[in-house]
Amino acid sequence: MTLSFALAAAALLAAEPSNLPPNHPPVPPGTQASPARPPPGVLPEGHPAMAPGQGMEDGQGGLPEGHPPMTGSGAGQGRLPPSAEDLLKQLDATEGLKSREKTFEIASSLGKLYYSNGRPGEAMMYFLQAEQKAVATRALFVEQRKKLGKKPVPSAEEVGCGFTPTTPLADMAKVADERAKKGDVAGSAACARSALEPVLEVEVMRGQALYLTGDKAGALTIFERVLDVAPSNAEALFSRSAVLYETKGEDVKALRAAHEGFEAYVAAHPDAPRVDLAKQLSVFAEETAKAGGREKWKQQRAEERRIRLSQPRPSAPMAGNMPMAGGPMAGGPMAGNSGAQGGPPALTQEMVDAIQNTERTPELEAGLAKLVEEGEEHLSKGRWDDALGVYRRVVPFQPDNGRAKAGMAWALVGKSSPMADRVWGVAVGSDAAAVEQLGDRLMAKGDAKGAKALWAKLLQSAPSYPNKAALQAKAAQ
Image (cartoon, rainbow, N blue to C red; front, top):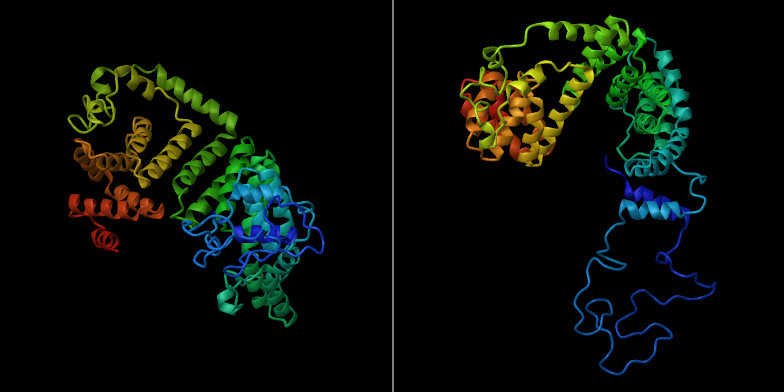
């Protein structure tokens, strides 16, 4: 999230206009300040006389002779912008700022500044102030949408609202209101909907702030409020479903709604970073609903686990079929003493038994999915060892997870490990599409160089890859 420090600074200036440096003592009324940069050779009023040859030179705005050039320090050109911490300190010290009238842009920027710096409780007040500026626009949108009936609300571009990314909310609201007065129902609804876009972002963040401060019911209300205006809003869709799944474990209707919400999120945002997690949570929500609630689902899983544990323990040959214990990858990258080569360590019989007997709870599956995402973040930053450490925790539990195997292979390639080619071959041979998709995720995280290198290596390793033409285009872009 990129915060508008300019707007936050504007709030400071509006709150207490002054051209004095911070902590400068008050200047008595009537005092005339000397110019910041007096003309060359001219001293400020009251300055003691200086001997000839000791005057100020022209080159650096009055620096003594021989003084090195000054850039990036003090006031004037080259000064660094204030940090978020500096802005917050000044805002905290600004008397009356919380109650002062603000534009939507100022209030929302202040809220985002506090929220992004770990102060959600204080952010909510500014988010609320920002939302208040859009009450009339929301009401207008709901009214005009109702008049449209079953007709879809057109886009702002289709009706020519004329908005730009920097158009203030107040100006957008005025356009929507004027169109309504002229009887342009579709145009008014479209312009009002477009004007509400930054408002929805603020509402989602307030919902997340409520969640972080313990008010999960309040957060749920806010997410549903956002979805009333924008049914496919990614953050609201995912967050509402997640809160329902977490807090309504015994409410079958709510669990079904969570399942439907996750499915809608996946359908509307197939390339979103949390798609895999949403798919898993969707399955968990559906299974829990079918069981009649979380407690019944837990009992069901416990019974399944009891039956599984009551069966004979696997013999040594059966254990050999476990990953990294000599089964399908025997003699391959995950067998033998591979840990000595910088790859995954071999599993003992005790470890195999422990993995087999571990209950596959929603929490475990969600945690593994989170680890895979964490591994990809490490890959995009070139942190090969960190990524490999993450994948070592996932693959034993999910030996068929193509996404995890692709990430592990690429980490070993990045480390120039002696076993990199063997692991890479296993990953490509078992799920080449997952390897290609890893490149897409690296590209989305800003690692264009790594993504192109991965695609190029995939083309070399799988010359008959079905999606070869598209892959070549991506690798060459």
